Image (cartoon, rainbow, N blue to C red; front, side, top):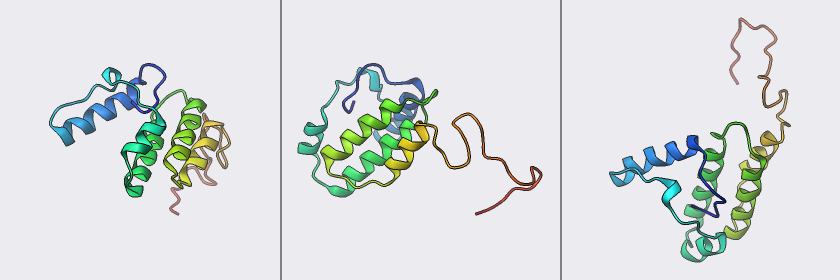
Length: 121
């Protein structure tokens, strides 16, 4: 796993197993993979589009962890720097993990003006 620091949380681990089963025909248990350093990934993956996809996947998987863990954003930021990727969603991800969502806290959903009305943006 990408610069992991122990067992992978069960929620992202199940997503990884499901996606790998679909892509490779068999599930991959991320907890059985050896950690790989960010600089090693940067040496092995030169394609900028694939690098950005890796950071996007890290952000998406990070949103499945409950309770939120701000160290995930820190590690993802280190990976982004090593891979030289510009991913603006990481800033929003970091803020969400710190509880600075616009209009709500991590445990309180945003309130509608009229609770019976669903608003579309």
